Image (tube, rainbow, N blue to C red):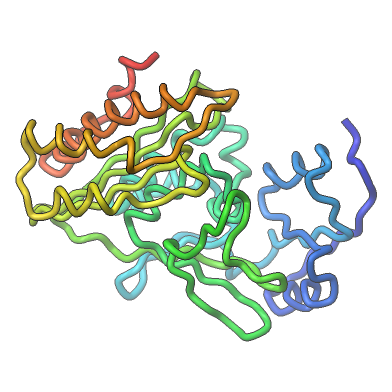
Length: 299
């Protein structure tokens, strides 16, 4: 399928050059990193840029580093690089889980975490873990750098807090406490390049703090603070889990679409929350819980 229209192409060597191009072209420009969402959107007529600004040569946007209490993930880091990172697997297991669920290996080799966040689709797999990790998104624009809490990033489906002449440069994730862990569960219709019917990230600390977030169950990915507050400071048992499950219908706002009905999403979310809470606790104790094995009963 041919592209729907012609556009210019630029490949800046620095952030300063990229910003100058953004300032000139404003809303008519699109940033190209992995391009897995962007090229499809152009082909389908969802956007019509006058220029693509290819940032793949900008060195400071590459790499995964640990520094000053954070793990920094550059805007060009792909999901395959996240999966290959022992630092991510050990320190941020929920994000590692989520990366393994993104599309196929071919897509993961190109698709970037930053591009995934900028796309801001409701079924965004990376969002629930990053919401639970309370990540900061570092952006660069006309006024310099600014850090946006991920809780303030998603404004509506496909809309973010990113300004017109601004680009996402890094994802900064505070190092979680050593006595904490979590898990990400995704339900799709089949293995492969399918978007989530429901996705849940569940983080637990040994002092009974809980963070819970979802995707594909509301207009934007979001934390479920009502359930978090219910669980806070309490030992997990069947009565408490059942009480949390009872809050599900008021905690999410799913729709019926091509992938699932609203009713099915509510039903499976109750099952996923139960399994996820137990699995997060298991991983905290043993670090061995397998999120894919937990979903066998849904197939």
